[in-house]
Image (cartoon, rainbow, N blue to C red; front, side, top):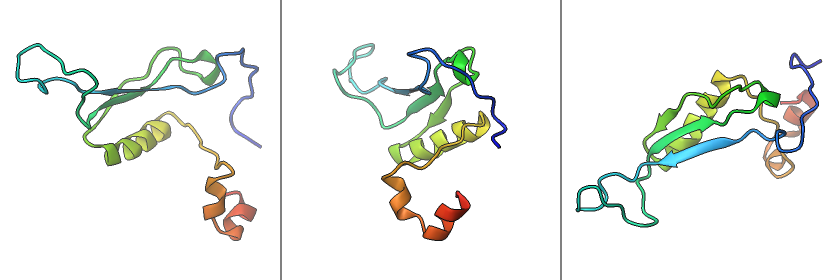
Length: 104
C-alpha cells in the first residue's frame, strides 16, 4: 500500500514540472549584453508549484555546475521532496527480472 495519498488532479495539474535555468552572464565581452541562444552549462533547477502534488509554491533552487551534474542535482531534488520515480517501458528493459519481480 502506498504511503502517499491519492488525489484527483484537475487537467494541467497532473504533471510534476521542473524549471531548469542556465546562466547567461559574462558570455559576451560587452558588459550587460547577451548573446542570443548561448548559455553556460551550469545553472539552477527547481520544482514548479503544483498543489495536486503538494508543492504550494516553487521549491528552492539547487545549483548544478555541468550538464552531467544536472542529473545528480535532479536526483537530490527528488529525494529531498519525496518524489518517487517509476521506471517506464523503455527503462525497465535494462533491469534484471529479479528486480522486476521485487518491484525495484
